[in-house]
Image (cartoon, rainbow, N blue to C red; front, side, top):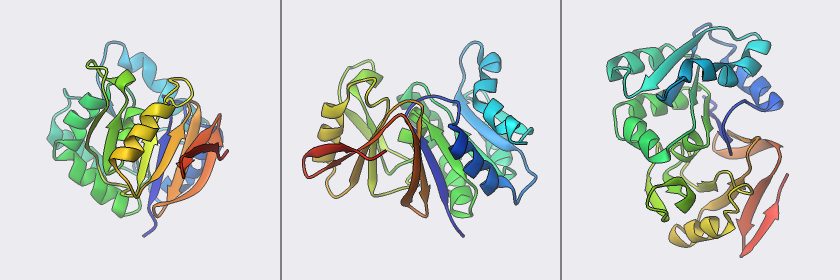
Length: 219
């Protein structure tokens, strides 16, 4: 079964072509798309930012799963019956605690392995990998951090909000800590689509690759 992973360098919405691919990969099922996110005030008003582009393409059924206030059993039941999974953006350490460090992680990986497309925005993208690397600009300690991710990809490191946060040093630091991986910086309003673990396409403002000490823009 083909595996589909979409990584975005900032928050929603989907870029248009990435949304089209995501919708095509959910078309074999009539089940809803699940949106996992850390709950915050006003989240109901914010959800159309995630969904509008998909709705324009004909998707109208969604499970909204705010964490940690949605019971894990309910989350797992919804994910089991979903045609696609979206993991939102926000405080990366909280996403790791509420998703990676719980039973939710197992069902996400099972669904991904079965061909259900997974899309992660910012924090959601970071926790999707084997190594979730967290910028000093993304934690209260203002330090380089790393922790276990969902392991949907095992050979890739990413830095999100790359140009906006001027995070070249962060990506270099991550590459020095974890060698033997492909290292990308992803700007906001930018997506990367991985098919079976390999980069298939990009769309948006900018994707950068760190290789042999040089950072080059690849889109």
